Image (cartoon, rainbow, N blue to C red; front, side):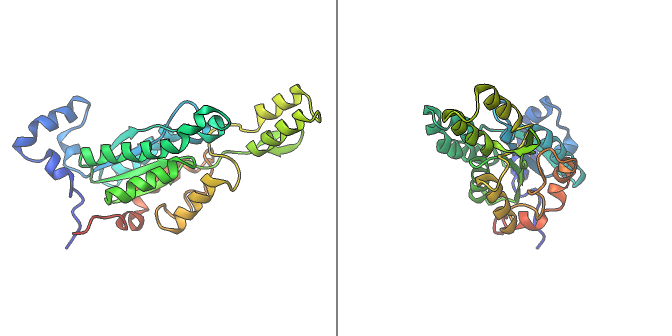
Length: 252
């Protein structure tokens, strides 16, 4: 028996009794043709406070293009993020682990509450990655996770830098090996744009592991955030990941 790609949304938008629901969709630009296709969520964690999830809105646009090309109707929504790199060492770090649950809960609420047929989850750090996958497991609908990618390395005095070099520079400053100007130069150059911590730390490690588990398309998560091919990867995520999504399908 063929899988019904509109296995959830038929209840939401089909038939005369659902006219009121359809009118809300039409209020923001959806058409009858859009609503006759599978409704596919595009969940991400864009926030204007951290490079880890900063490129999500741009990636979401390309994911949506891919969904349309594959015959679906994309519906974008976003949740929050707390980045350890900023919060650590302060009271704010107490919110970090909690944020994982908030993200998973909010994605689940939107997908379940609006009977979406499937969704693509865009993640970017060591809390948003497991949070998105937790939501995928709870919802058990066709889904796939795309990692926003690692940050580019920075450069200073001919040396490549990552955030790890900033932590080392703090120690060097504290013992008098470098001055405040040198510390500022390192911190200003270590992280040159969007992407998660540059190193085989938690985010990159989990992104690699989830490729091996079939949660993400093989080879996609390893493309850095600002790589020239990242948007192409985002476009291909929906159309090239049917095997990953099928593992999360509801039983017939």
